[in-house]
Length: 559
Image (cartoon, rainbow, N blue to C red; front, top):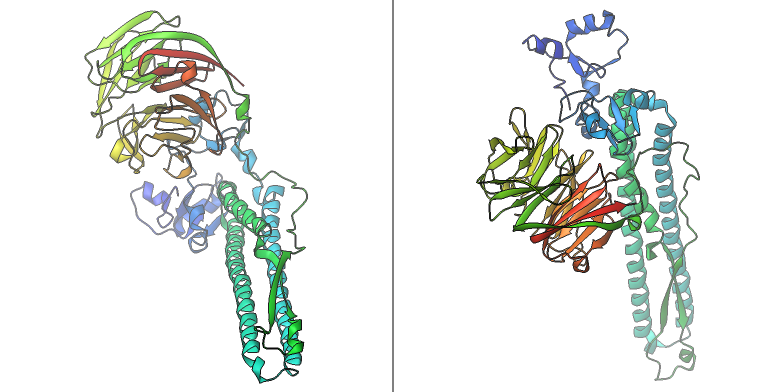
């Protein structure tokens, strides 16, 4: 939420506090009575639509919390990147130079409330509600059928019972009890599903109310971004409803009774009145689904095939280092490595020959290229981050932070680093102000990388790779110890595929952008022995992987 809508934004800029009475989404601020009048006649704003503050507050909380300005640069969104599925301000564009799918966001959100996409959005909700109604009716019909079958069986039992003597009363009672118990059991199953469907209907009704409110009162940008938020929830609800019909919870349950023929002989050998049979078979109910969508509601991440990635060895490199914790490929092809125990940095030329060494700068952990001709060196177990100038080959600057710092990644003038107990933190390299992205405690040896509006970080202790946004919201977590044990270094390519070092599996694996699939790319057979870090150079499509001791490898990556 960009502005406090209870306070007049214009008056607030003049250091005057006045209660706002209306909200202008285009100006992204509230207006008091006096400013409202000026706003309505001003040449630049008289065409703006306003809504009363009381009505604006009725928007769903998630919509009100949607930021309409860039968190990193505090500027308005001007473009939308389809490749990375995120809005961009003019400064964000610098990190999207290779993206060919940047669209003017004003064109994208123009008339969004009357677009086919929004219409399909509403129709999708109506479709889910209709399917819930039909499923509800189907289950109620089964309830009626069960009750009718029960009555018919009771009649049959009663008619048979009149031909028997009192000796069979107990058997009859037992059979009735069994019948009732089975019927109640099946009824409970159906009632449980009906209760669940009632809850789902309530959830969908809430979505409809939110959509109606958004359509009436939200800005075009809010509407567009809200659709993206809500669409994921709707997709989940739709899959849940679809999955119900594939389970035995919707089987058509029937009960019947077969009277024991031996009862007609009325002998002492008869020990039961009959047998209650329960049959269950799939019903002919099917989910109604619109055959064609007239518009694509959501722009998704690229869906490349993870199996198409091919690595070929470019060169084997002798780093002459022990305890390597960081590596990076600089823009001129130079490679840089950190040695934690020896507390030094070694840089090599693109052909693998020595360039320069920097010593006595304290502990050295991760190394991260920065756009201004320098690179940052984190320190692991201390609160120091050093900046090294690649031209002068000397220490350029030392920054003190408030925590230990392990893995790091550079993003638009900021360094995002793993701060252990303090989670993920972001420091501005211009004014050294620090912002917390997430407060989730990280393990030691945690590394982080970035792609678009997403961050990916490793957890050595829990054997996980986690994806979150810049607000710290977790989008997915990958955990599969058959592929990945003790994940360390992490990097990402141009398509959002995530490359991770498996320390205890002596491997490099790649994870799909949605975190749902994984493939091992390199193993000990390729020379990996206690690998610790890697770096994917997006400009050359080369992958640098460094072992703990002495050896590193440079691979060409083809897709």
